[in-house]
Length: 93
Image 1: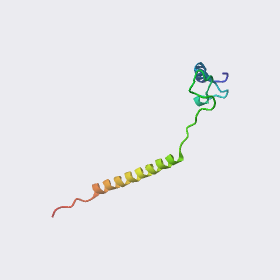
Image 2: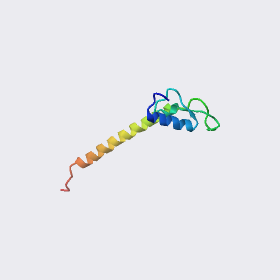
Image 3: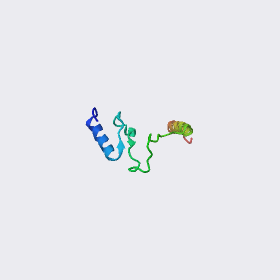
Image 4: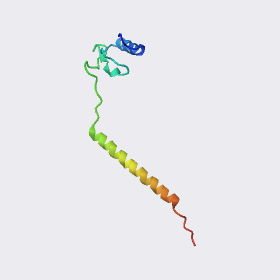
């Protein structure tokens, strides 16, 4: 653990106590570089690369569409409110 800061050393030692094998080029705070050391210690975890978060492109498109719809609706609502407040009051004469 030479060359690590005191914080990195602490994280590495704590991870080792919990059953993880430390990658040689670990850089704090990238804890996802730690790999399980023994399957007996973590039976539900499989050796190898940790699972990566995958994002469905279709969901991203839907989120963008909703964002655009909400922004346009907000602009229209704000414009409508401004028009109502600035409209001259009609007298009943």
